[in-house]
Image (cartoon, rainbow, N blue to C red; front, side, top):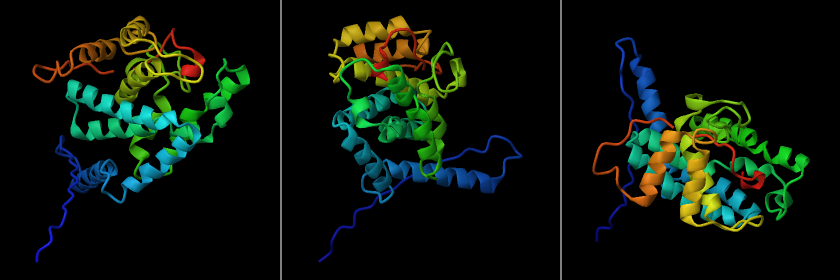
Length: 253
């Protein structure tokens, strides 16, 4: 009797653009991207790394698991809308899962505090992108999204943290996750706030476009939320885009 053997395939690509590009470097880049793709496959042994980090987050805040799942789903939708490469989409979905990983080092009583944060508590919260950056930097599998974790609380107008980056200095996937993260926070209950309607949340994103968020990406996000799949049939915008500006309370970070 023959038993079927399940097959799992992960792909990674790299393109030689200049004649001087080293072929061995290209192969190494393609291999790195392949392993990143395997991180997203639940059947892969490498997926255990993500699962372990995610469980650490979920032990701190039960809402984090649902938040991560919704964020990943939206990340795929927006990535498809923008028609980004599969490699970049893999990074985007991985970032959606682990953008808050630095919060594992933040005291639970601060993360779940129902009242406004004190200044010293807020200064502790603001350290989580740097903590997440160091965690990702220490892992070869997560190294490619380390800079994006560090930057997803930067604002389009340069008034975010921790580096004060502005505009397209902020990695594209960080700009995308900033919008998705803010939308999900607004539309779901938290210990310190009640959720708002989807329409109210989209209006808030629009109000903060150009200050907190990349205005082009906000427009694409709004269109996708109102008309799912609208970009799949036609030409996607070539916009590059995040940020965060004058409208969400400090606890919403």
